Every structure is written in structure tokens, then in C-alpha cells.
Amino acid sequence: MIQLGPGFFSFFKKSNTNKVKFIRYVLVGGSSALLDFFVFLVLFKLFLWLFPSAISSIIPIVNIAGILSGFTWGFWLQKTWTFQSKGQTHIQFFYTLLLLLFNILITSWAIAPLAMLFNDQIVLAKIIMQIVIMLWNYFIYNYFIFKDAGGCQ
Image (cartoon, rainbow, N blue to C red; front, side, top):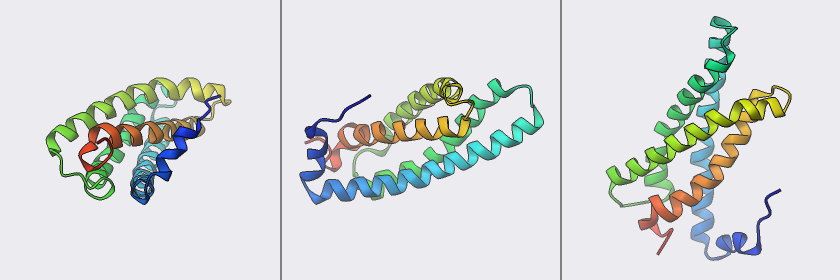
């Protein structure tokens, strides 16, 4: 099991700015994740109904659709409201898109085995992957993509 040392939590003791930024990140990310999850679930049920024998082919397709919907909603809100970044949008968008592609590859690969680990609970596997991505994305956004807003100085 992963253990977080005392240095991990000192990030939030540095200033109220970090706390506010993280709360905003969670709100925007949470709404993006809900949209992602809703699109994933609706499309999964629809495709499963249309193509009941193609479950292994359905998961990556509906996962990508969900992630893209959450990404579209979240990028501008993260840039303008959460991190209040004035950096070059096209460069930040490019790096965020690369991160998105990485997230898509990892989640599309991991959801099916995770679901099997949890007795074919696809919804639980999707939620676990969303939590993992939420945590690593925050640090990547804060310290690399939107660093001009005070994440890495």
C-alpha cells in the first residue's frame, strides 16, 4: 500500500492559496469526473444493449468518450478559475492533451483488469481510476502545466 510521508501534507500547510486551489481543483475535477462517469455509464449501457457480446471492445470506446467530455468541460475551468493561469493557452492545452492521452491509455488498459479483480465491478474500477487520475493530475497541473500561476516557482 502507498504511504504518504509528512512532506506530502506540508504542501497544504504552506498557504491558504494551495488549499483554495486544491478545493477549486476538486470542484472542477469533480464536475468533470461526474460528466465523464455519466457519459461512460450511459454509453456503456447503450452499447451493451446494442452489442451484448462485445463487452471488451465497448469499454475502451465508452471510456474515451467519457474522458473527452470531462476534458472539454474541465480544461478551461482549471486554467481560468482553479489555477488562474495567464500562461500560453495553446502550449498548456497541448500538454494537457498529452496528459489526457496518457490518462486514456492507462485507464483503458486498467479498467477491465481492475473490474475482474473486483468481481466484474466495472463501475467500481472506473471510479478507482478516476481517483488515481485526479491525484496525479493535480500535481502535474500545479507544478508543470499551470506553473505560471504559482505552482512551481
